[in-house]
Length: 278
Image 1 (cartoon, helix red, strand yellow):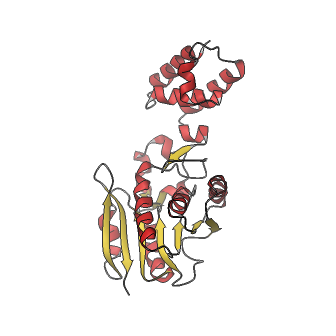
Image 2: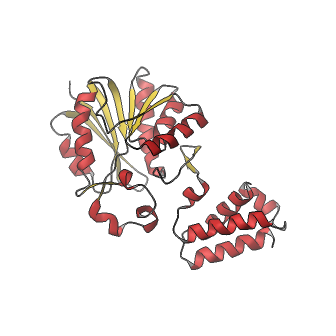
């Protein structure tokens, strides 16, 4: 069997199973089996697939057919122009989260001495991206030790100036010690689990997805603790979930000012930034 036929057979299997973007998924999995880039597939379409590559390719296709996300099979996700290692201990970084990175980078470039903390860092994609884009040090925490191991792998891979530590939100942070607090917190209500994509609900870590019954529980804890951890005049930036804006904005009404809402490319409110009143 040559590469062209293997690619077509993989595409057909995925398409019949209603897997999204079947052709691209088959290409990615075949490339991973071959340890080659996509251009190799077309430059060597008539080359025979080795037995070992076929075994790997078949296993990857089978995993994808069972619902395992492609990123967890290849252990790779591109984010902010860089490749990050991912596994089931961390959320797969989404393109929408890049808006949070852009907002943080813009803030830090105006205030180079800012002391930053990424809460719930997961893969470390946010903290590492901000550190590399600004050439500044970033603190990053997570309640999950397994997630921190992934973040450390990515930190080392990119040689980023990020200090990682285990912490439940801001419980270990010295009062008034942070200038910029950034977070993509859990915000999915527990009741929404039944309506989620199966590959998200069944594979990605629930501790990073679900916030509780209402979906606002982590926002409430985070914004309350942020009033202590941030210096007066410090900035808070959080990713927003679907229909989270009004509820989060209400939480910030008393103690926060200079609210800024950043929408994603689809026009949905994606990032909320606010300044702790002096």
